[in-house]
Amino acid sequence: MKKIIIAFVILAVFFVFIFAGSRPKAVGTNQVQPQEATVPSKDAAAAPVSKIKVTFIELGSVKCVPCKMMVPVMEEIEKKYGNEVKVVFHDVWTAAGEPYARQFGIRGIPTQIFLDENGKEFHRHTGFYPLEQILPVLKEKGVKVN
Image (cartoon, rainbow, N blue to C red; front, side):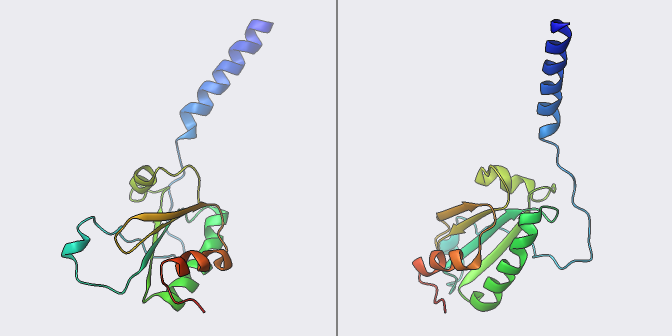
């Protein structure tokens, strides 16, 4: 009997590891979603001079509850500070967004990554991130926050 239980546990663990990497594919919804965009290239010197001081990258999914809670936060930042902060969203549960999860080595969603004007990461957070806690991060790089 012990051997059967041990075999069952090993089999269960095996299936957990097999299916842990599979994610549901996002499908279109009627909700307004943040636009996907690309991360600034390392050839920033060739790009025209911009007023953008911070790139705020949100790595999440349209089907993740804490990620959905971040949508109004991202919209508020884009609305108030869009001339100094570029907001980028990647749905990492889609084929198009999944490479960004690997690129940035995220361990959970939502993950917020903040890049300076040179494209260098200066701050990272995992989980829901309230606007009140993000504003000091933006201010650190010279964004004029109210």
